[in-house]
Image (cartoon, rainbow, N blue to C red):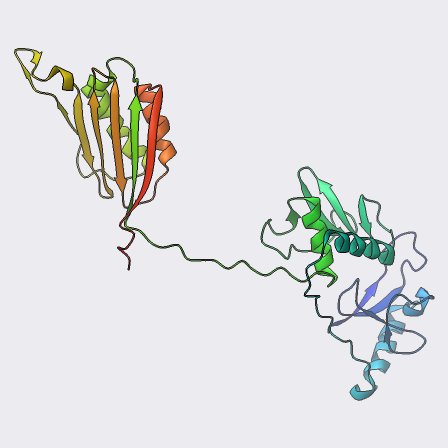
Length: 304
């Protein structure tokens, strides 16, 4: 354990400005006694036993202690975290004991000696001293470095810090099976009149959608209208357009029927994409009232 000589900086305390020697953690470690010459716990009745008037006195006491043969020195026993899972009652009892044993030197909603849980906006901070003091790093994985998402997570960090709760284990990451690609199928009903027969709109829709998805076109979109003769539809019940844009990632195709105001779309890509981008842009362009959608994973055995 690292041994350090430190000065008491808590204003208003009986030992403010005096020096002490600590072994291990600053707040929960052992301290060098000026009476016995060995390390002991801070829970002694006479706290001044662990303080020295000058830094030189602390150095001399430490040098004298180091001169004692190692076999005669009392070694601090490592505290193993408890392996059992705490119930809610166990947790509250542990927090109460921690508050009682550590005192109340810092004013705050969850003061624990020189350590406190402080609410900052929507997050919580564990700090020793004021907010600008040093902090206890989050032992878990749910929040960023020093902050905690809620009060319970912050309190649990204190319990872990003082070896009352075991350090949480890292989650086991299960590798997801690889697939070849993804298909998003969108059927649009009751589209705005005229849009299912609009070649220009269909062309611009495919052209812009590819850019929104961050994909790469192999060529410009192809849009084909149903056959006509002398300006009349040869298949009026099938009036509409068919369109396709080839992509490096695969392709997007559309088929539409103007008589029933129906448009169906198939977006297929070997690159994962956000289907909501397709849905919202199609809603903007075709103004449909109802829709059905399906998301498929393609080629599930391709990687194996």
